[in-house]
Length: 207
Ligand code: GAR
Image 1: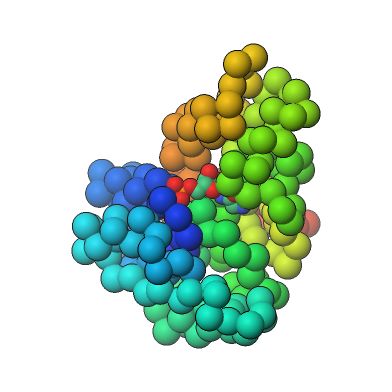
Image 2 (image 1 turned 180 degrees about the vertical axis):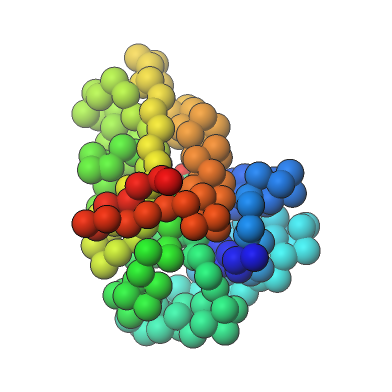
């Protein structure tokens, strides 16, 4: 059974999707053993508490740099004996001290079709604002491994939704969460826990 540590910063609907998937047996060979939040007031912490999952708060604002913050995260991941780290709406870019130590063991959900609308500055609603400003007709979400470049690690799963003429960023965000993120993130986590993701030439393939 693999130890899954989930990193969060906000509402935690993706964390909830993982909790629900674990409860209904959809996550094979994995258990959420710890939730770590970068924000003390993240609602995701309540979701962890409501489900009896141990949680830690490592506030980003208490650390002077991304490196010192990442070192604190690394220490916590090691203490928790994490086999898999899931970034579920975690709004901080981790330094390479973490991404190298946990290479191909950190999964992120990004709310767009990578390599579009991604990288530094593209997070949360900003992504959907940029999608609507550009006028693309299809968007979606990407589940990918995390490496030292923002949103540039190997892609595991992607799913799409149509962009409608009268969409607001909030409406589009909700459509993508409901139809793609909350389904594909638990699916990718389950595949990982069953050792069904193979890496070849830096790319991920589902076995
Ligand atoms: C989700 O849409 C997730 O894809 C996005 O933030 C939202 C968090 O929602 N993540 C990023 O933008 C990371 N770059 P949640 O806290 O309800 O899961």
